[in-house]
Length: 292
Image (cartoon, rainbow, N blue to C red; front, side):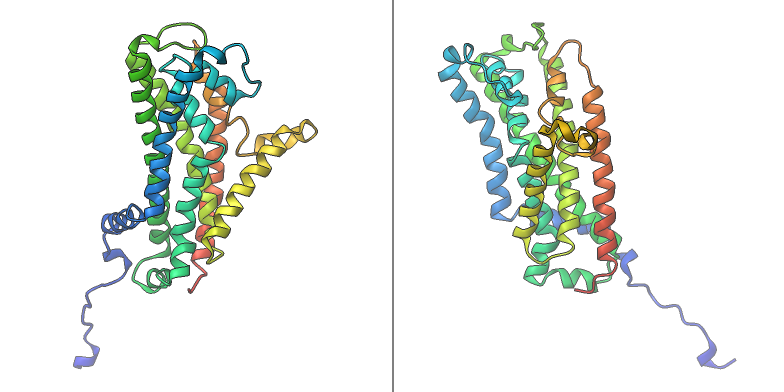
C-alpha cells in the first residue's frame, strides 16, 4: 500500500467546532453596544415613570372623563393603583414603542450588518446558516425580554413609591398581596414578550431580503398599523383571528380581573407562536440561498 493511499485524518474546522455560546455572547455584546439600542431601552424604562408621575397630578380629574378606548381606560384604572400601572404602561407602548424595539433589533441583525458589509463575514465563515439565524434570533429575543423587564421593574417601583403596597387592587375590587401582584405582572410581561418575539421574527424575515434597516422597521410598523385598522373593521371579522395585533389591548386586561380569564391571552399566544414559526422559516429559507 502506497503512502498516497493511506487516509490521513484531518482536524475539522467546520461550523460544528465553533461554540454556540461564544457566538451568542459576541452577538449580545454587539447589540448592547449600539447607542440606539440603549436609547430605546432607556426610553421604554422611563415610560412607566412618566406615566406614574403624570397620573399623580391629574388623578383627581381623570375619573369623571374616562376614555372609551381600552388603553385610556387602563390609564384611568392605574390612578392610585400600583398593580395596574406597569401593565397599563406596557399595553400603551405595545401599540408602537415596544414593537419598534423588536423591529430595530431584527433590522440591525441582518439588514444592518449587510449594509455595513459585516454579514458577508458570517456567510463565508465556518458557521452554518442555521446557527447564524439562531444567534440573530436569540439577540432579537433578548432585546424584547430586556425591554419588557425594564418596564416591569420601573413600573412596579414607581407604583409602589407613589402609592405604596396598600394600592394593589384588581379591576374587580379585590386586594392582592405583593407576591400575587408581581406574578400577574410577570404573566402579562411574558405574554407581551411572546408578541414581541413574533414581531422580531417578522423583522428577521424582512431583514433577510434587504440591506436597508429602515425599510425593515418601516415595513414592520406599517404591518402593525394595517393589522390594527383591519381589526376595527367588523366587515372583515373573518380575518381577525389571523391578525397578530388582535386583542393586544384587551388580552392583558384579563389578568387584572379576579378571577382571571386567560382564554384571550392563550389565543394570542398561539397566534404569536405561529408568526414566530413562519417568520423564522422564511428567514432561514432566504439565508440558506444567500451568498452576500
